[in-house]
Image 1 (cartoon, rainbow, N blue to C red):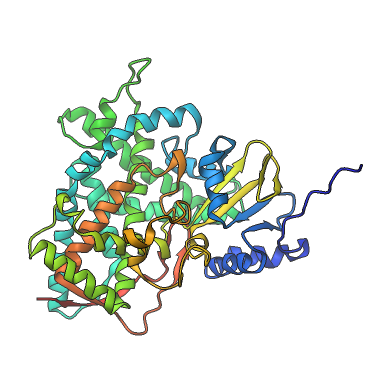
Image 2: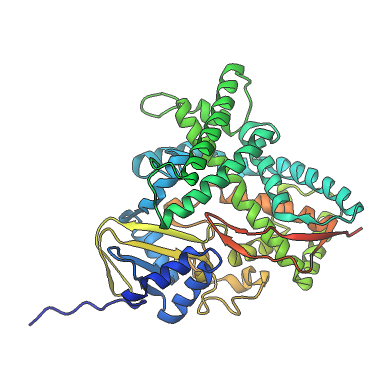
Amino acid sequence: MPPKTQPKPPGPRAHKFLAVAWRLLNRERELQCISELVRQFGDFVKLPFPGMKVYLLNHPDYVKHVLQDNHQNYTRNPTFERFKLVLGENLLTSEGEFWRKRRRLEQPAFHYKKVSDYSRIFTECTGSVLGRWEEMCDRHKPVEVHGEMMRLTMDVVSRALFGTPVGPEWEIAVQAFTTTQEWGYRQRWLPIPLAIPTPRNLRFKRACRTLDQITYDIIRQRRQSNSGQDDLLAMLMNARDEETGKGLSDRELRDEVLMLFSAGHETTSNNLAWTCYLLSKSPAVREKLEDEVDRVLQGRTPTAEDSSRLSYTKMVIQESLRLYPPSRVLLRRAVGDDRIAGYEVPAGSIVMFFQWTVHRHPNFWDNPEAFDPERFSPERSTGSHPYAYFPFGGGPRMCIGYQFALLEAQMALAMIAQRFRLSLVPGHPVIPDPVVTLKPRDGILLSLRRRF
C-alpha cells in the first residue's frame, strides 16, 4: 500500500506571502492580522513564508505541548539572538546547562518571602508618584499614565536591584532600551547586518555603548565601595558557582543586571498603564475595586499581608494581563521532528503563539473581549485550562519574577484606587503598539480626581 499522505495544515496560500508579511510588519495591523488568521484558518495555521516552516498555534493544548510536555524539543527562536547583542548571555537569553545554573542562582531572590520583603519598596515608590499626582490634580493637569508607571517601576527595580532610588542614568538607559527595541523589531522581519552603517544600525550601536557604560560604572563603584548592601546586585556579586567556587565576572554581572532592569520595569509598567485605562472605561469594576480597597485598608498603606484580602484587586490585575499581555507573543524553534494537532512539525520549524489571541479564545473565555475581573474568581476559574492564560509564559521557563510583578502591581493599584479616580481624556487615541512588549503607542492620557 502507498504511504498515507500527511495532511497539509491550513493557512494562506503561498502567493499571499507579501500581503501577510506587509500586515505583520505594520505594527498597527499585526494584532488584527493574527486575529483574522486564527478566525479564518483555526488554531493551527501555516504562515506562507518562503523557505521557512512557521506555524501559528492558538489552542491551549498546543501551547502546553510546546512549553511544558515536550519543552526539551523546543529552544528559543534564532531571532532571539538579537536580544543577546543588547542583554548578553543571561537567564532570559540562555539555554541548557547555563540557563539551569542561572535559574538556581537567582531563584532565592524571587521566593515569595523575599518578594514580600520588597513590599515596602513597592509602596514607597508608589507614594512618591501619587504625591506628584496630588500637585497635578490641584493644577487640573492630566497624567500620561504609561510614562508615570514607567517611572514608578523603574524606581522599584532600581531600589530592589541597586538599593538606591532611580537616577538620571537609568532614565537615559530606558531611552537606549527603546532604541534597541525599535532596531530589534525591524531586524525581526528585515534583517540588515550590523556591519552596514545604516542610521538605524548606528543608533543601535550608540545605545549599546550607553548601556555598557552605565552598567559597568555601577558595578565598578559597588566593587570599590564594598558597602554590604542587601539587594539583588549584592546577591549576584556574592554568588559562587557550586562546582568551581568562582563568582560572576563584570561581564556576567553586566548581562544579568541589564536583563533584570529591562524585564523588571517595562512589563509591569505596561500592565499598570493598561489597568488604569480599563478602569477608566469600566465604572462598575472601578467601584467594586474602590469598595474592597476602602474596606480592607481603611485608609492605611497596604502591606504584603494584605495581598490575600485584596483578592478583587488581584483579579483586576489578572484580567488586565489577559486583555493586554505585556509580551503578547512567544516563539520557539523545534530541535527535532514533532507532531501537533495531527500535523507534522519538522525539525527547524518556528512555532509561535500569541497571548493576545489565546487569551481571547471563544472556546475558553465567555464574552472574551469584555473586561470582567470576576472570571478569575475561584468559583469561575476552577477547572479552567492552565494554558488558556499564560501572561508570564509557562513550563520550566516561566518568568522567574512573576510573583514580584503581581505583588508590585497589586500594591500600586490598591494605592491608586485608594486616592484617585481616573478618567480617559476625550479624543486621546489609545492604540496598542506591539514592539517587544505591548505598550500604548501614544501613551494614555487620564484626568485625575481625588476620591476624598
